[in-house]
Image (cartoon, rainbow, N blue to C red; front, side):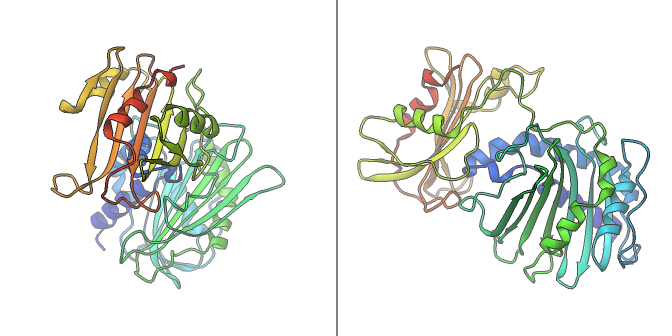
Length: 395
């Protein structure tokens, strides 16, 4: 594989597999919106790293691995991309590396933790291994970024093992099944220290044989490598809440949704991960039952210097309306693919309240959180709009 092609492929894959809480997504629409800022941040850094394409090695330019020692820890807190690359290569099991690259996390205006991407062929097959360093807000909880299993109704799952160790660190190994034909399994493993330091590995199959190139035991061995200890200098918590912003607990959010439903509607129990600020439940009304997911983020803003209202309303088009009390709202239905004439399979409403509270409501028919079927939903778009714009959401 030419250097340019190898670099582009790995870069694109690394951006898609960068550490973001896919498991936190509770519905397809909400997942896209909820992860958009994190994906843009990581993808921007990786894209900026194209300037260091020399770090990508041509096929065969790295020897087969035979359990070499990790590079000696450097005396400085900010490690180089080369250090990250070489450390990951040296800690991988026996196999043939076809390309590798490393990033400091400082390649662009947006700062992230250092990372490395390796293409490797092992006895299990060919695939990619992405390792990244991050930091989460302390104290570490079950809902902390990257410390919990993916929601199996949101992402097809083969297995997940989550262990809280005696020192309070959390080890998670999640094996995800293919979402599309022709794809292999993906393994996501993370080790989160009590002080918030987190090492994460994403390993996925490229060979079509189904298994990722690393076993769970091999991934854990890499995560526990002492080579990563020097890489956390300057890495800030990416999930740190803004001062004064507290996300509502799932139980409280479920009760609030139940009270705001139209007369005659029945709310089922909360389903999925108990993540602050988010709830998913089934709602029944007049013989129809649909999934409804609600996300509430108080004092929402896209960036510290941006105008939340302008950001929220940008590009919304004629669907954007305003309530009498000044709430901006967008509501409507969505087809399976944009621009098609097929039936609507998802309905939703997004509202930005005058106090900055953002409420997102998604509704769909189907057996789980990843299957969207046509048919009349339990709640109409107007009822979703009323739910999203209810003054009760405001702080």
